[in-house]
Amino acid sequence: MIKAVVFELKKDFNTEFAALQNNKEDQLLTIQEKNEAIMDLLQNLNISEELFAPKSHDLENPEAILSVDPSEIKVEKYYTKEERAQQEEERRIREAKEAARSGDTIQTRGLKTMMGGTELNLQKKKNEIDESLQREDWMNKPVEEMTDEEKAKLKDFETRLKEFKEKQKKAWE
Image (cartoon, rainbow, N blue to C red; front, side, top):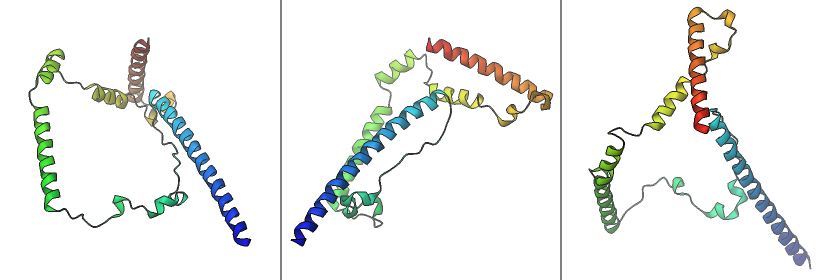
């Protein structure tokens, strides 16, 4: 009779634990979705900030205790002759595809013609603009304490920032 009571207690505990684990996973997904929305907003505001990303612990999942992650294995894997030959064949095929892809194809020629011989450097230009529009710490001090050179740099920064905001406003419209 005691064994039956203990069994029922274990069974009740397991069902309650599973329900709590499912609830935690749901909450983690909700937090992750909110973090993604916050990151999108921060990117639009050109602010970089580290967000808290909660994770579940390995001990909360009993199956994870018995599984081995490949990063935990410190010994180099032994490959048979057949496996080495197959890997070499895959590497050769991959290199041949990359060589064909990087060569002079009709798609690359068409793209170069369409672009007028220029490359797509939009991300590079965006990074340069972001770097040039970063407000430095000395710009926050009162104007009375600034030197003439600092005042000129501040005025130049404000005009560039105003132009950038106008361009951004036009792009949104």
